Amino acid sequence: IFATVLGALTLNYFGLIAFTLPQAAAIGIIGGADGPTAIYLSGKLAPELLGAIAVAAYSYMALVPLIQPPIMKALTTETERKIRMVQLRTVSKREKILFPVVLLLLVALLLPDAAPLLGMFCFGNLMRESGVVERLSDTVQNGLINIVTIFLGLSV
Image 1: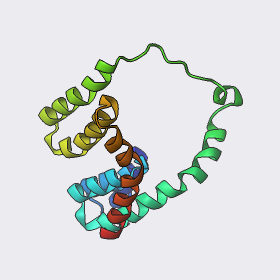
Image 2: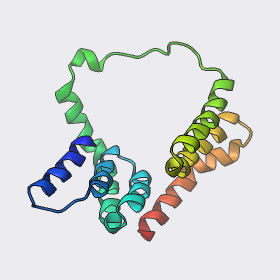
Image 3: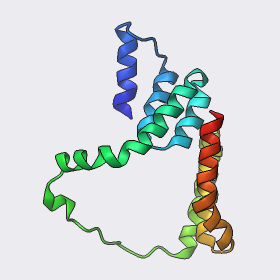
Image 4: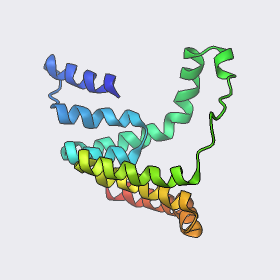
């Protein structure tokens, strides 16, 4: 992400392509491999690049399964790839429910512009962890996300 931002700013420095800092940041978020986040952020920072960023982000997301394995093999040893992580402690249900609530409050106070994006993340987490809306949570995690992604792609 940061290399892409610096690359876009370098292109601007040498006069090849004129990118502002917000445009470079919007381009850089494509590396986060999350289409909705890239679309949201580019809509806020560089609406003129929204279409191109949306296509690039979703193309990148589709190619991650092809791109990632050779890079992982090149940068890690076989021993490192065989390491199995163990959970240090069990996280209580109370902590799982309090996390999205506290996170959203902190984000809303410190970074209000990011509150809608993180709010949806927290809402999804809260639905899954509370166990109260099991069917709704299952629908949101499976069928609905695919439908929303299709509509998002068509609308951009």
